[in-house]
Length: 454
Ligand code: PMP
Image (tube, rainbow, N blue to C red; front, side):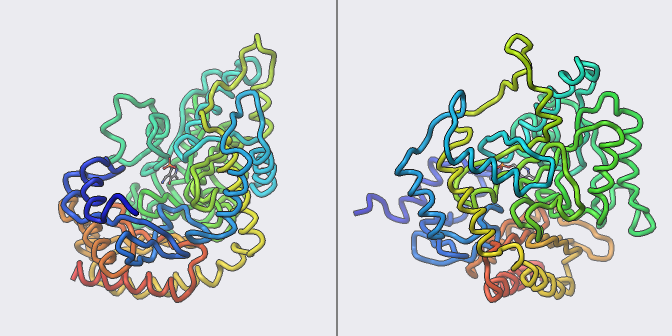
């Protein structure tokens, strides 16, 4: 016997929960969608209504909801132990997972530092990079304490990850708390921050990175980048070759490259990791979101041996990396991640993505015919549809137009959950979604945009 009704849950949600990234004064005006169950590509609310999950429950779900193999892997581990600590102890799933991660990530990454969210994976990479230069060659490089990050970057919500963030709306309020970073122009070709256009620009945005590095490399510890796609900024897809160029520049100027694969890792772009598209091995790589197939919070920061070895020494040398969270390397989460990767391999998920990616690409083409669709950006199974007030001038909708929100609420009425990023409608279908389901995601999105923008 349930001790709640759907009305009570809605009331308690409004009364007790402070939702993330949410203007609560607005949120409480709408009726909340309270999810109770999941089944494959569907979320099911407390009334039993089914919704296609068009954003993979915030970019994490890989094989669908309520996947038997993942449920069983978790159950099996729960029957052994739910948690033990990695401080001074080891546990079986975290060892097996670390070995697996080293095997599947780009060659050269061979040490795994666990945490619980994308933000902490980034925080760890930033701290490792800082400490690495302090300790390398007896402190010969200890002036390397700053970071280069991208305009429009999003790397998480902790103070360090916000410091390397570049999204005015999310990050500016915290400026006084943040450490200083050098921001380079985002490769946002639709609205080029340098006022140029492809291809005559000659990838001037990469040239700008070189200029910063040439001038300031002696004080730069690392450059952090979302490889290929700046997700939270509205799916900004970098031009081909940009990432490779950044890698070359980092190597040339003795700067560590941190690849934040939190959003793009685990198949999202059509390869297991986005760095693979350009044959890049970063010095540090951040993983989270899809790592457990969307089941449990887990993150990992991978490092090269070159980075790791700068932390080796006796106790008295104080080279230890003093960082760690209570649930670091949680065995249940690591078991879920192992089962997730096993399924990706056994079910040949990555190989099967090609057809879905082309289907999405074809299906998105007709959106450009809509009067207020300015740009469509896609990489793999992630896409952003940028809505504009005026297509000719690219005049954006105003914040108060709340256009993205209106579109996603219309989609919700029709059984699809999607999320806007400002004026960009984001599609992040589950990797396991079938073609007919993808078709439905596209169809509902198309009609919702058409209806709301007129
Ligand atoms: N990095 C990137 C590229 C992300 O997209 C996100 C989350 N959207 C994060 C870091 C932060 O991850 P989390 O929300 O798990 O802290």
